[in-house]
Amino acid sequence: MAGGAVALENPSPARLLRVQTQLRVGFRSRLPAPRNESQESSTHEDCGASSQTYIIPGAANTVHFRAVLNISPKDRVFVLTGAGISAESGIPTFRGAGGLWRDYRFEEVASPHAWQRDPRLVWEFYSMRRRVASDAKPNPGHIALAELERALRERLFLCTQNVDNLHEQAGSSRVVHMHGELFKSRCDTCRRPPFDDAGAYEPPSEIPRCACGGRIRPHICWFGEVPYHVDEIFRALDACTLFLAVGTSGVVEPASSFVGHVQGRARTIYVGPEEPANGSAFTECYVGKAGEVLPGFFRCESS
Ligand code: OAD
Image 1: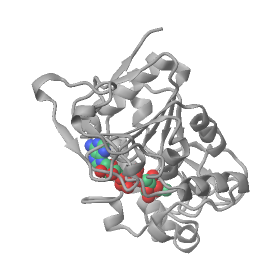
Image 2: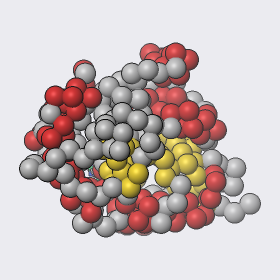
Image 3: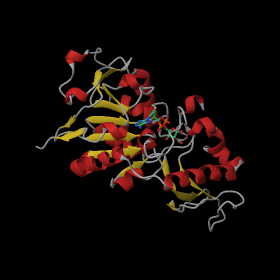
C-alpha cells in the first residue's frame, strides 16, 4: 500500500467519499495567511523567559514551546494520539529513527496477507510488542490527558491510534482504540467478541486456537483492514470545536484526514517534536515532546 496508508477495505461509500473529499479540497486553501509572532493568537500565552518560539515551515502560525490552551465551557474537544505520546514511556514509534518499520516490513507482520502466509511470524511480532508494552508506564503526557477527561467529562473524545493501554493506565476511562488493542485477541473465523489476552505465542508455541477451530489472532487493525469505531469517531469529529493531535506523523489514513475533516470550523492544534506530514492543516503547532508540552497545557475555563 502506497505510503503505508491504512486502506478502508469495505468502507461505507459515503464515509470514504467524505474522507477523500476533505483530502482533495486541500489543506492550504482554507488556512489563514501565515502570521508573525506579533500577531500571535490570544489563545497562546508566554510562560515568561523560559518560553521559546518556533516557526514550522508550512504551518499556519507561529507557535510557542511553552503555551496554554484555553478551553471554553462551550468547547467540545477531540484528541487524536499517535505513537509519539507513548515514546517517552519507552514504546518505539513506527517511523523515524528507532521506529518499528525500520526493522520490520509491515506487509510481513501487520496485514491479512501476512496472517495467511506466516501467522507464527505475526504472533512473534505482536508477542514482542506485548512484552515491551507490559513493562511500560504512562508518562506525563498520558496523565495530562486523563486529567483533561476529568475536567471536561463527556466534552472530551479521546481517540488513539495506539494499541497500548497507557491512556487507561493513566486514568482515561473512555479511550477509543481505532487500531485495536494489543492486550486483546479474537478468532479469525467466528464472531466471538475480542477477549483479554496477554499471552506470548512465539515459536515453538503453536498458534492458539478457538473452540470453533479458527485461529486466534491479535485484535489489531492491520493494513488493508477497516479501522474500528469509525462511525462513532466521525460523529465526534462533526461535533468538535477543538481538534488536538499529539505525536502522530500524519501519514496513515484515515486518521491523517481527521484534521482536514474539521478544518475551517474547529481549532486545529498539533503537539509533537516535529512537523507532521499534514502539518499545514493545523492552525497551531506546539513543538516539543508530549510529556513536556501537555502538563500544564490545558486551561479549562469555567462557565
Ligand atoms: P509514527 O511512528 O508514524 O509517528 C510518530 C510521531 O510521533 C512522529 O511524528 C514523531 O515526531 C512523534 N514523536 C516522537 N516522539 C514524541 C514525543 N515524545 N512526543 C510527541 N510526539 C513524538 O506513528 P503514528 O503516526 O502513530 O498502525 O502511526 C500511525 C499508525 O502507523 C500506527 O497506528 C500504526 C502504524 O503503522 C498500524 O499498525 C495499523
